[in-house]
Length: 110
Image (cartoon, rainbow, N blue to C red; front, side):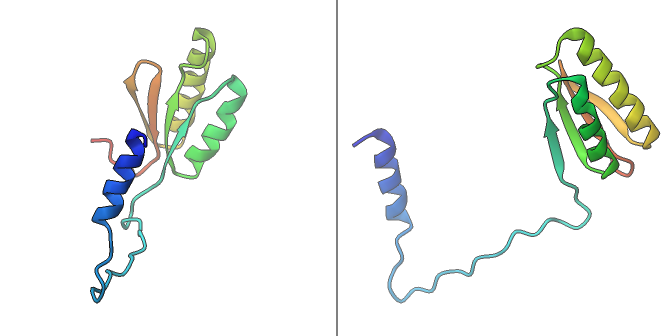
């Protein structure tokens, strides 16, 4: 018996149904009103920029990791995405080295 087997048995013991006790109904997850999905992208080349811009045009928040690109390509990708988000009326912020968030128009960046 491995470590994880013991943890599963312990977890299963806690969840056992007691006869005569009614189980709570499962609730479907519903997205909060006005919330937007978020996309995470790791472009491998400059050619991947078009797909990222399409997500921005769909008014999705996109986090872009540039760590897989060389310095020159990363700068080029950042330039084109910053221009695209400016044209779409959104915003851009650097989260950390080689990681940016692009937000469409109407998303509060505070």
